[in-house]
Length: 426
Image 1 (cartoon, rainbow, N blue to C red):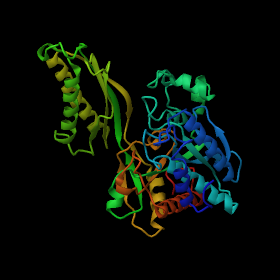
Image 2 (image 1 turned 180 degrees about the vertical axis):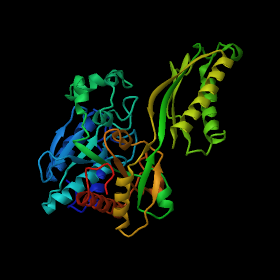
Image 3 (image 1 turned 120 degrees about the vertical axis):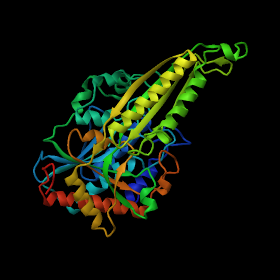
């Protein structure tokens, strides 16, 4: 189904294969949302590839696909390696998926040698990291970490389908979500490889980077409520129009993050990625406008200060315009430093390939920040062209993917020769 085994290079080829139908819900773009037919097609093919690589494979209670390569002793604790298999709408082929394919390649490298380690290796394809179907992201990795709230089953997608209904339609039991939780004595470490999604590595001429920490983030929904009315008969001065209020609020967010006292602090950024006017007709003044806010920084303190400043401006806008407003928290993730010992081992593995070791923070959220509640984590970044991600123009090279796979194998080998089950390998 893909080219002959060439570690890392084949992983990229498999991502390319999964960039189109039936692994996408659309023929003209890549969109692979959680618990859809495209997700099912991806899981079926990944299961085949995992089995080829010598793993036993199961679908866990949260919809994650898990392949296990046993160690020298059955039921030994496992190193977990992987990333997510879902995509944003009109996304790129390598975000998340490359980390899953590299995990399979790494396992197959040991399987082809007939080599078992003192620990097991598990490759995982998390079902939902992006939150592109349901409002809160990373429900699947939260389930594995044992931190998921069963109330997530009440979330609905744009069509009004609840997560519980989607689970049932997919053949999963929504009442068993928490059974996906793993114990620290089962999983002793997690490694995630991911495209950088930024321009730093490319600017510095480096193929790989070692992640030092993942930024804190909050997702919020803002809803301005006014009075719907006829677009042609309601004078401008008599309107309670939430549209201009929302526009003001978006500019306030930009101002706080770009020009305010917090601007430039701890990598603060703010984004409005979705806005909806209701009822959404050309000739109707909207009765309500709602939009998303995504606020991130390297520390929770800076993130929270920015959220407070933006919220204060939003409330002032509503008061001045005679509107009501609500700001609802959808998701909060604290900053997540990667484990120092594992990061050192990964840095050694990268250094052995001949290049300098670049450590850098991640402004994007990843499953690793959730799995950190279960076990120590490490992350490897792979250079992507132009720093472009969440975009069909996403691109990586065969050579960089091959280097990433070799670094990951080197990391695993270092774990095998050291105190692998310690939180800080020696």
